Image (tube, rainbow, N blue to C red; front, side, top):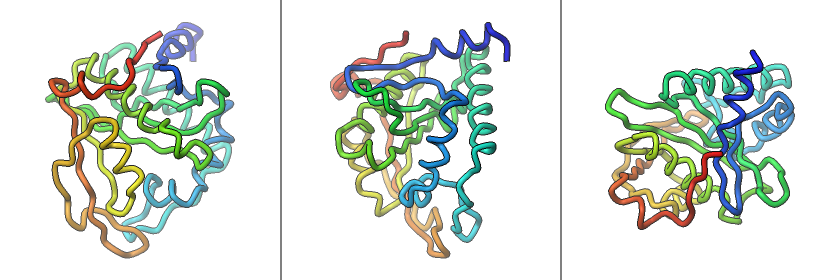
Length: 208
């Protein structure tokens, strides 16, 4: 990667007083490996086969390759303005510790963005996930998103609570949409619209 590309991707940082969303770096590979082994992240956010059996956590080399792909998506965004595949590492603003991940799964031709997020156990229970979702969603609305959606597997009550606290509205349930360890599971569908967003936003996204 060129120095110019490094500089452009490094400038994509979203922050408030409590959390920082920044690009992943090669040095974050160990954190990604350890986070990928967390049972809740494996169940609700990890990759599975068609029977819902989780894939093994990545090796350090595999994690570095994943992070390189994250950086490629961010480089493409700086040119195209389309943030599909842009993934941020979530840091605790006070300690600087990495605590999670959030990013843009897709951006359709009709300007609908879908996002996802997770936190490691040490980052949970302090409102950091809600703040990260607010920062990311606000940023997407600034980019021109007409709608931002996210999905939560039924039973993942903490993630559903994050969506609601951030200002997302539960629009329905996709029955038997996912699978885990051979059992079908419902998936909840949440969405936010820019016309509803200003009154719900507890913090302001700052692009530095």
